[in-house]
Amino acid sequence: MQNKDRVLLITGGSRGIGAATATLAASRGYRVVINYRSQEAAAQSVVDAIRQQGGEALALQADVAREDDVRRLFESIVDHYGRLDALVNNAGILEQQGPLRDMTATRLQRVFDTNILGSFLCAREAVQRMSSREGGEGGAIVNVSSAASRLGSPNEYVDYAASKAAIDTLTIGLAKEVAADGIRVNAVRPGVIYTEIHASGGEPGRVDRVKAQVPMGRGGQPQEVANAILWLLSDEASYITGALIDISGGR
Ligand code: NAD
Image (cartoon, rainbow, N blue to C red):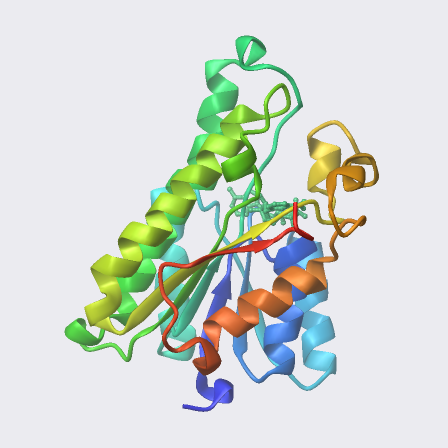
């Protein structure tokens, strides 16, 4: 199948890695659904930029941590395009840095609801629609994990790191579970990438501080993560499933 017939959903696609992935996917011919939770104007500007380049895109609101929202999101995609071929589970949050002893249950719940529950719910809805055993045509899922899943992020955000480790395990288990459905499931594990997520963790300049720990000596760009995601989604990665790909400059 040509990319131009393929429909790709990117969660949290209004900015950062999600927006870079959406833009690259559209330039390669995918019809792109950009999910956003609250940043409607930003999501719409990504859609507008894609359309100006002759691509096809649509912005749809949903909080991935809410089951009803996720169901509605996937129903809207199938209503609009009649199919779904690929999912990038990109939406994620990082909260203020600090040790576990200071973390409230409310904070832990928020992080796990978005990063883990959201990824599980979206993967479930995608599998139900893509499964070749249930009348679909197969597909591909890429989960956006983090290098934090193996570093643990002590005194910064062990909750976030643990949530990303859960995404790694989801990737490995689901890949085996749905291989016979014609669905590949992989994950990327970015290191420190120049996006706005670090400001929400209380340190806007974090990438420049941490880059000293990166063997390649620099932070990454969202485009460099998007390149790997698009490759994992593509037919060039047709025999790759259950893989966790580090995009971390060797960190
Ligand atoms: P970002 O903050 O720019 O993007 C995250 C996006 O997810 C935002 O658009 C946000 O609105 C959206 N989002 C958050 N909660 C949501 C929800 N409940 N429902 C729908 N959308 C929601 O940051 P980013 O760096 O582009 O992050 C993208 C992914 O990459 C995240 O999963 C993040 O954990 C991961 N990651 C980032 C880095 C990095 O250094 N930037 C490193 C490793 C992993």
